[in-house]
Length: 353
Image (cartoon, rainbow, N blue to C red):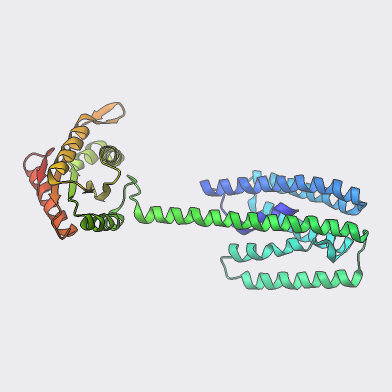
């Protein structure tokens, strides 16, 4: 019974996505783990002298193995429902048989975060209230009937202590699961907000943020800053003759060579379309010109290979020095004008702005 509550929060997950398949794989492992723990419970309750509870755990093992088989067959909702039924029924039977003090009811409390977190249709409050009514009703019934198959008080204390330890561990595991889920979601959102999905480079907005930080640093130190703007030559022809997939591969190819030939401190971004922009802190205009020439030669020397056929790719560059006020917009305009001069002069060259 114990580990099964960890599968409750995502009962609506879809198995069709990669994440969904991974999740349901985890649910299946949890079901097997729960079955293993229930097998250990059989030994425990036999040692404590409670044959009926040992028998209940046999049924629980069968339910968990059935849930595992259902999930393996992608009958996910039915499998999870079976797990829910096992937890609710097992908690009630254990509490009724050896008393409320045994702590079987603790497992019902794990439904609360499960219901609240998983709920997407506004049913959380009614479900939690329903759970509360069930919980209090079970408590009243246990007090009214008394233990149906009582154990000596000392043995009940042992069962309670085991349940307390398991509940602490399960709440910690549940919190850890959701912490990891939140961190992964935050990382995914940050990536979507800051990176170009095709090339993996910074997008325009993230570039401006990073560039502002670097410009502030260079302004304090008085270090020179240069800007490098480049554009893939005849990119439309690559798309028209080789297809848009080839065009995408060309952009990735260019991005990789740019990254490999720039310093770690340089700020590189896909500026838009087939244009790339790099901020070069601590670089004079001559140093930036040399870096652009090096990259231009590297691009020219490494054609894109598609289906065994080399496709020549070249870049045109515009390089500008940021002035004393570090006006990024002005420098970008001058680099763009220099890039236009490179295009007009025949492409595959570097011009200064």
